[in-house]
Length: 470
Image (cartoon, rainbow, N blue to C red; front, side, top):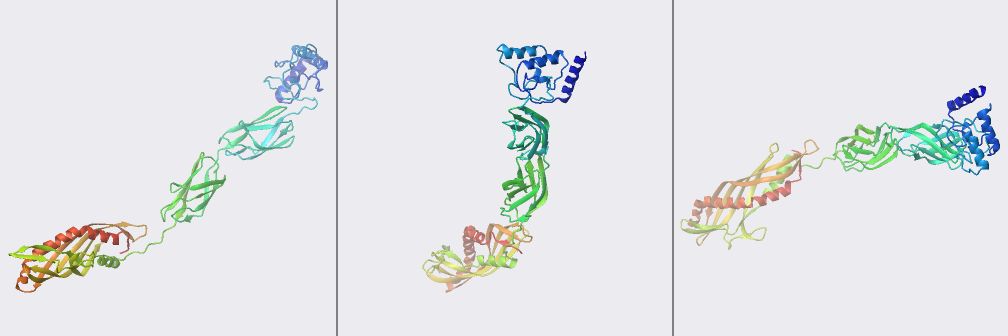
């Protein structure tokens, strides 16, 4: 009865400690050998009063129990050719079989106990790279490997039998991992040893805080959580280029092109979420361009309109009151700028007016021409004075610079002859030309209408793209 109570007490004590001490199966007397003394030890444990600090070593047949079958298995191995003994055998190791038997202490020679005492630190970023110090015993057991959540630790250094250094692999944010170490003597596990922290993503600052609108400014960004995985960064919702994560608290990237004067928020996103730094970066203002004042723009417009107008030869030909009349006959015509024959009308004055609010412009012109005219066989000169109005739409757009606008288009140019007078010299027949003034005005108007697109293109080439600061 006392023997049964003692056995029960030892079993309970072993279960309470739940140790994983290394041992040799069948080496019941813990002398490092397998012989008949071990069978006697098992029988003494079963039927005598002799305790054991490593009950697992007595389980020779590895059935998770200690009974008469164990000494029989050991004797069969020693004397009857039953060679197989379940591991750990013949060398030391941990019991690979899951059972209720325990081994609090095994005193056999050359048997290393593998155990993990602790780990520091116990948490780190999911990107990995955390340097670990692992304490315990049995690390010199040979062939050591170590895993965290099933992934091998890197940079393993066995400092001594009780200290190991390593670096964490990458993991999943929030995962709580078991640390498992294996040597030739067995395997030990520390449950919940390390936690991959859920990173706190934060932007502390950015340097520099301004740069050219063309982009390309290299930014140094500080904060934390930059190694949270799949990092992206935007400025005014446009991605930074050349992003490099220097550490969990520091990264760099180049600004994209932006709008001059714009102040942008910086947004960083990782697998852990997003963080935003308002008013992080301002694109430099461009210097204001040279611009035309109202007077200068009017002068430019007048310059484009104050050019001689050349009527083609013949300008008009027909019969009036029974007389054949030719205006600007070829034998009396001059040479136009393009080399063709014609007769010039000279512009005497140009008075532009620009309505910037409504995008309208007009210019009142006066001019004259000494136009050669043949009336029958008589050579006449029609002294013409005229007035006309040029009108057009001037399309303006606002710019980033207050008070400065830009000409973007010229449209709907028209020239209307508003006054036309003729006084002729050369004799009586020439004086009859006054009655043809209306016909000559109509001829001139038709010519101006036909050439309006040409005039519009010339004025457009001169004005479009110019900046105006009226």
